[in-house]
Amino acid sequence: MSVMKVLRQTLLKYQTVLTKHPYKVQSIQTSVLMLTGDVMAQRFVEKKKLGLGSVEKVSEDRTSVRLLRFPMMGPVLQYWYTILERIGGTNGRAITVVKKVLIDQIIAAPLMLAIVITTITLLFGQDLAGVRAKFRQDYLAVLITNYKVWPFVQLANFYLVPLQYRVLLVQTVAIFWNTYLSTKANRPIDGSTLPLKKGF
Image (cartoon, rainbow, N blue to C red; front, side):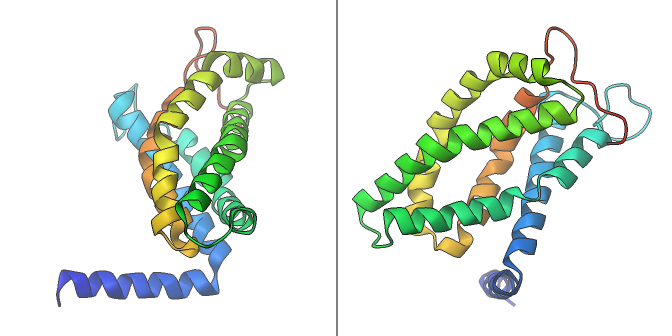
């Protein structure tokens, strides 16, 4: 069996399951891809080790937060892309695609980034003062980096990719974005690491 045939069959199976269970599939794939980005951040950026017996080992609590607390992001993105189709149109013209990208980056990007940073900071034991400090420290820098990456990804996404696959493409690219974002979100505030609440 050729590689292309295997890929086609896999894509068909994915499409079938996605059509039957869109929110479940998107929730699972989003959680897994966010977890992947966090593990990459800990392993390759923060240089933590895998396995027992290491002081600086990959935090299972931290990755569990990503896996269990962010499954809603997939369905939210799908709903947002559906709204963009209604607002921006579906004719595939260049001006339509640019309009969708502008709406996405002006409205959704700052809001989603704010939600992620706020949620992670609160889950890791900080109060509202800690959230404000985190915003002052990282929000603008991360948003600027976002504008260097995501407009180009979304241009390709809206122009080339069918609606039902857009979340998958974005979340695949977001493995690398989540690696960066996870490193930023878990940076120390005022010289101390984000403490994890008991129970997570």
